[in-house]
Amino acid sequence: MSALASKFVVLWKAASGPELTPEHKFHPTRKWRFDFAQVDSRCAVELDGGAFLPFGGRHGRGMGMVKDCEKYRAAADLGWRVWRFTTKCLTQEAIKTTIQSMKLATKGKK
Image (cartoon, rainbow, N blue to C red; front, side):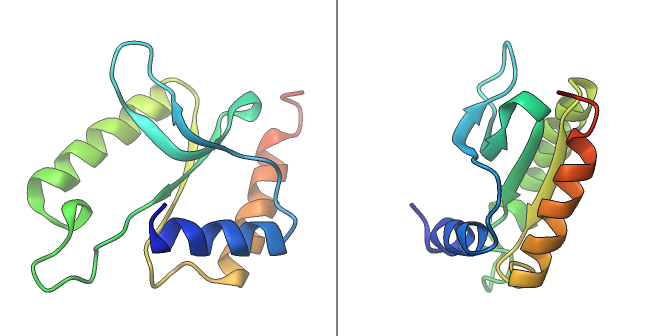
């Protein structure tokens, strides 16, 4: 597990977030996976590491961004809501807000 994923898990548990499935394959024909997903409600978390590397990580380079856009459009088409985090925006406050948003998103889906 990456340092970013480990930090996310610690913050998520500290905020009493709902149980998430790691590395959830969400697409029926593509190999795409979400870093973490609440499968029943179709809510997911993606961690975009490497955004602040000198030459950019995969998520910050042109083709990486194009591929991410394709993945997230397909996820939206399948009814998924996705919250994305970089190392800089992964804070306790952001986690708390995300948990509240997930709760609102899941009302009526159960």
